[in-house]
Image (cartoon, one colour):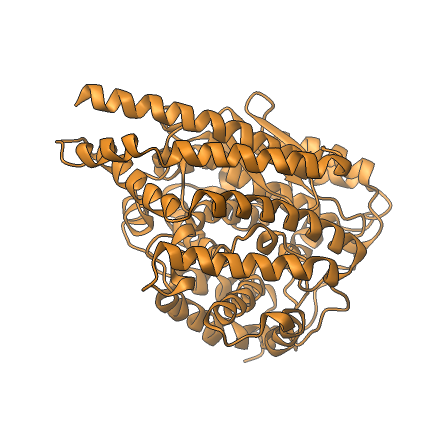
Length: 498
């Protein structure tokens, strides 16, 4: 058995080497690589992905896994074998030529999306999007012709989460949060116009340096670049790369993009050492998003956290924030109001942005939405749920990168992750004086706690099992609903005058 495990280890190393090369190339493509070299890169990246496919579907390794699953394995070894068998079945169901062509298609599609968003012209991206959708349907049916296509895609990002389970979750969001959002629109508004003055990019970059220091995102294990859409790539626990994006007329945008991505980064950085280069590093999207949303919202928008960088922020932008106190700024970054851009949305309306995308994706794959009219349906859905329509394509269907990359089924995990983070935060606050530690600048106490209770386990447990281990309960979305209702009722003084 030891000899078999050693063979598996060597194969995992080989596969991880290809993954590293591909991930590095993808990161460069999104950040620093010249656009003129795209076609050359994409041809070769598709080839490299095809070579990685051969390694990932090696029949000798598949046979080895079948032998290992009959052995008396440790819990960790058993989990690794089970995940690898599932991964093998998923990958080999797609013929190599289809896999290679789809890889190239998503690279081209992402490039088309970037051009389309910059030009505010959906027609540039539309033919690629339609082809991505058609190819994904084909691949999902190859994987399991009897299973609902969207359920297959959902399982890729959060195992065991199906349309049926998500429907219950999003029905709860609609029932509990839409009335609260409507009520807030009639309440006395909170001043936040100072957030949307002119904030030069060069000074925002200085702020990011300070904020990385406050967060503990250090250069010995982390690197930050700039991209059109912020993201995180965890090459290894000591090589985690993130990006942010700058909006010179929204100072909160880069701040909370950075905090969000650092939440992801800590998950990658604080996993068990021996998970690097193995499938146990492949954390589900819902759990991963729970950590980015926890740091961004449950910690990042607290007064006790903001005070650690606010004096520096005010010094950088003395004119813009001349009469703005710490309390003013804290309230402003928590304002709830319907908006068009998901990544800049407040905590309360954010899950509605995800609800819209979830219902669109369901309709795309069950045939109830005509994919040719997606841009119009997108606009109609925003009006239905938030009472607003996009003024242009860049703030509408072109705002997110995910569909260009074929990441259908990912969006629901953002709302799921937000709900998970509420449950984790509830337990964390029982165990630690959060505001007391943040007041002293001790964010590390909190990230260490998350490392101990969540991050170190990587993909060793499924969602419900990990939450039960960390909080004593399986997933319960009511923590999320209760948190939002309590926070925004107090913030807007909705109970006063009764």
